[in-house]
Length: 78
Image (cartoon, rainbow, N blue to C red; front, side):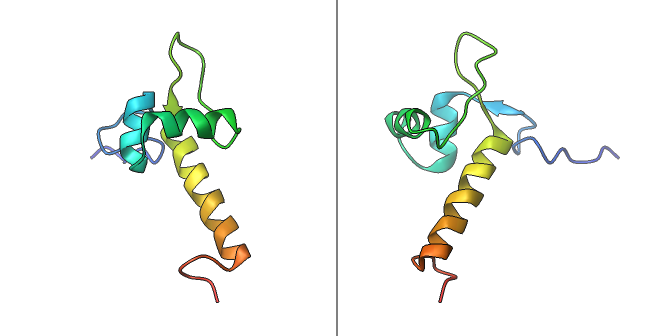
């Protein structure tokens, strides 16, 4: 049996397009652009179009969730 790839999404892809990344985060593609411009998301530019590695999207969620918890605004926070 093949081991699951923790760096891929459920379809086995390692990176998503701008539109797919937006869908996976539940936001608009223009919001992806804003987050990228602010440096909060770092796409790979190895191709003509930016690709967002699944691990980068997970890092973004982890970092922004941790930041909210530190500020006391998180659901898990005190």
